[in-house]
Every structure is written in C-alpha cells, then in structure tokens.
Length: 370
Image 1 (tube, one colour):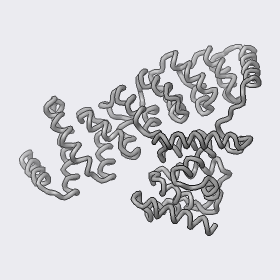
Image 2 (cartoon, helix red, strand yellow):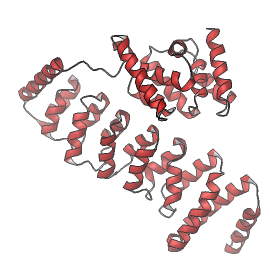
Image 3 (cartoon, one colour):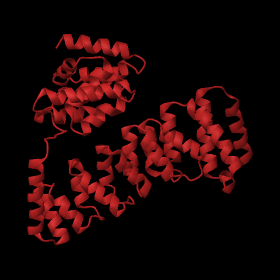
Image 4 (tube, one colour):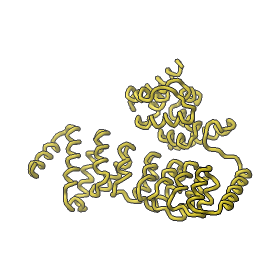
C-alpha cells in the first residue's frame, strides 16, 4: 500500500463513528508511528499523539487496550502520558507496559507504587533494572508481597543500605529469605544476619557460598532465639496459629479503619492471602460485600467454589484474579472450597461488574442451600 493509499484509508477510518473503526484507526496509527523517523519524537508530534491517543483509548474495549499495550510495551516513541495511562489500567493490560516500556522512568514508577493497586506494585518491583529511588520507595511502603517480588529481582539497583533493609525485613516476611540468600548483592555480614531466620537448607547454602565461620553463625542463631523468647508474641500469618479471638478482632478493626478511609478495595483480598492471613481476608471480603464473617467462612468451607466466586463478583473482583485467589484460599484452608475452578469462574460471566446486588443475592441464596 502506498503512502497516499494509507493516508486515504486512515481518513476514512477517522470519519467513521463506529467504535470498531476507531479502534482500527488507533492500531493503524501505532503501526505507522512505529515505522516513522525522528519526527514522531518531536515535541509538537508528541503533544498531538498524546491528545489523539488519549481520546481513542478512553473509549476502547478491554482487548483493544491490551493489544495496544503489547504493541507499545517496547517502543520508545509513545507519549509518556499515554504510557502512564496504560500502566494504570487493569493489570492484564498494564503488565507488559510496566515490565518493559522504556518510556517509564523512575519517577513514573514511584508514582505507580503510590497510586496503583497491589498487583501494579508487584509488577513494578519485578521490572528489570529499576533504580534506587524505586527500590527505596518499595521498602518505605513495606508491603510484604511487593518486597518479596523485589527480593527476587536480581537486576534492581539495590544500594548496600537498601540490601540491609531487605535482610532486616526478611525477619518478618519469610518469603524474602530464599531469594535473598541467593541475591548477588548479599555480603557475608548480611548473610550472618539472615542465617538466623532461614531453614536448614538455606543455612547450608549460605555457609557454602560465603565460607564463613559456622560457629559464628550458630551464635547469631542463638542470639536470635533469645531475642524471640524475650520479644512480645506476634504472628501475622496462618489461620490455624491464631490463638484467640483477640487477634481476629484486631484484624476486623483494621479492615473497618481501611473501609472508613475509603482505602479498602478488592485488590486487598489478594494482598491478605499473599501474606497468608486468611482471617484478614475473611474480614475484608465480609466488609466489602456487606456479609457476616460467618457467611464468608461457610463459603470458604463449602463443597462448591462458585459461592466464593459469587461473593467476589459482588465486591467487584476482576475475573482474571479469581483463579489465583481461589488457589491461595485453598492453600491456607486445607484445600477448600472444593469444586471446579472453571465452573466457578463462569459466575463472572453470568453476573457482570454492573450486577453486584444480583451476585450478592445469589450468594446468600446459595448459602441457604448449603
């Protein structure tokens, strides 16, 4: 197709008011810009493209935005405003952009850490070659799942001070220990500290890697045990280890505080599960859906997974996140709820995001039959 024919085709698409034609126009412009010279990077062209794409993206379907994000994820010419818009979209759309886009700078990633959902924060932490400001902000925020992702990112620009903070954080966040034990920036001094908190297999790996004095490490372990004995009890993770109702009441107060502040969102459900806090998950789901904790607990122990799917649909959880959520619940709850995952996910097709009340009623009706 000649340049003139291409221009005429784009003109025809631009005249159309069809959503499908607008989406075709957007993807055609992407392909055209990808073949263009330095002109596309000029300030005037960037301003024009930013305005054009913003208008087109806002009305685009989910799948088109996902395709657009994939096409632009490795390109260096898109306007920063467009790339940041896609980075803040649903995680299935934004993942490729967050992981690869050269347009995103450290300041953009820091802002995404502050404003994005937990899934976006995790993708930022996993991004190759993130800079020191991004690493420091992750550690400042202290979200366990995000710090675990950072611990596994060997390419991140981790300063000695940040590495020390990560090792200290691993005392409470067990998921950080294994990647830190193998981290290229771990030194012998930090390894001695880490040794006190890891299992036997990781201790052997640390000893082999650093050829350090085992007796010194064992003394460090003895000191850690003594510290733990003197410290007040605190166990933030499994359901079965919660000794009494006081811990559950504290978690319910935390959820109520987040809800009152407008900070309790469906993404918090995954965060609670990734921290292995099942009772916190129950309290969050109950508060988001207007259920009782007992109703949520019955759904979690049912012989069918569609009840949990109904509850999640009622609170606005994304369909793509349910399989992960169900797997985490089963891991913490002895394999329950039972039932087929795909059958449960079909609940999201039957009750769209605009039908939370119907999904809630179906959930309560389903509980009545259990």
